[in-house]
Amino acid sequence: MNIAIAQSGGPTCAINASLVGAFGQALKAPEIDAVFGSINGIEGIIKDNLINLKNYINSSEDMELLKQTPSTVLGSCRYKLPEEEKDSEIYEKIMSCFEKHDIKAFFYIGGNDSMDTVMKLSAYAEKHNKDVKIIGIPKTIDNDLCETDHTPGFGSAAKYVATTVQEIICDSSVYSIESVTIIEIMGRHAGWLTASTCVLKANGIDAPHLIYLPEGDFDVDRFISDVKKEQAKHKAVIVAVSEGIELKGEDYQSGVTDNFGHKYLSGIGKQLENIVRDRIGCKVRSIELNVMQRCSSHICSKTDIDEAVAIGAAGVRAALKGETGKMMAFKRISDIPYIVDVVSVPAKETANREKKFPVEWITANGTNVNDSAYKYFLPLIQGENVIRIKNGMPVHFKIREEILRG
Image (cartoon, rainbow, N blue to C red; front, side, top):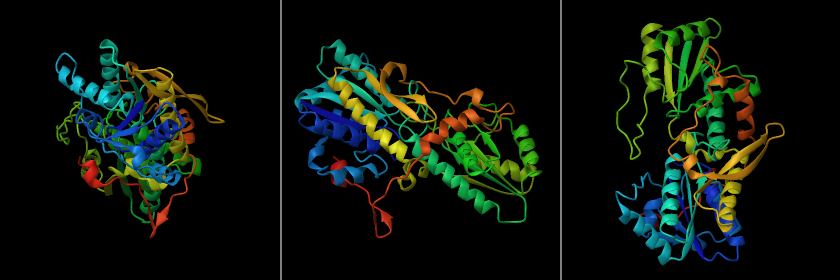
């Protein structure tokens, strides 16, 4: 038998580690021959655009290099698989590709929307008696996948965000004049990544002084009052805000959506900057961390990378045991010592759903998070990988551009 692996959705610095985990586990399985990589997610299966990964990943050194490489080495997509009754031809193309290459297991590394594909494909295969196992391997910096304690990619993103905020705090505190710095952090509907900045208290840092999440109610007047209260205590006020915060009556979003109906968000930081400038009049700047949050592998969490490898490997083992229509997930056993187990859950329980940040972890005044959040986040950012460097810069694993273009 052969297997195929694809990557989908927004890049992270751990998604290639999951690919390594699945690939490495496949090499250990005598019943698996070829390990195909699908170029640009499920689109590569539809277009029969596959490569044999054994022709590209040739050594343990390659695998180590791939683990430290951010983004998706196979390319990605945001392709929404239609319902079978609306377009059965797509499903026939996918199954035809599987049959042509004797693919008996397909592994999709991705987030909420990718699990929608896992759910639909496995249901189709079962309905039509197709001999192929479909397994989802989670990935997202948003940490919003249901049925798993956390997601690969999140720990490294949280580590980068916390480190960057710490450096911004150092920069903002050198002047004698009052200032407000607003840091816009990714998080469409879930504030996990913004909330993770609370880990700075582990180093005795009391900032960000204000943390606002989509799960809370945001009011502009209250925000200005909050900032003024913090100005009475701190010369340089640091505010962390999720990109998905909504300002009632304010139009700052483009209104453009992706194939899954998700809005493209950007601009809340700048909007709040203008409001602070108009109403308070102090020095103020906004900083949008943007895509650096998800692809900064130079400061990745070793825990995150190791777990990404482990969950990819577990996916292959699950398929070989006959499981299908499942997503691999982390089950936390304890915080101290930090212990997790890898389990499988039905993909239908996580597809098209979002795990919100717990409202009980938000302080009563809605401006910060409590110790429960701190205890949850801190283990996920632990450990440092030894990064291979050349000419002063990290080295990344690459597949030739003309191959990725198909």
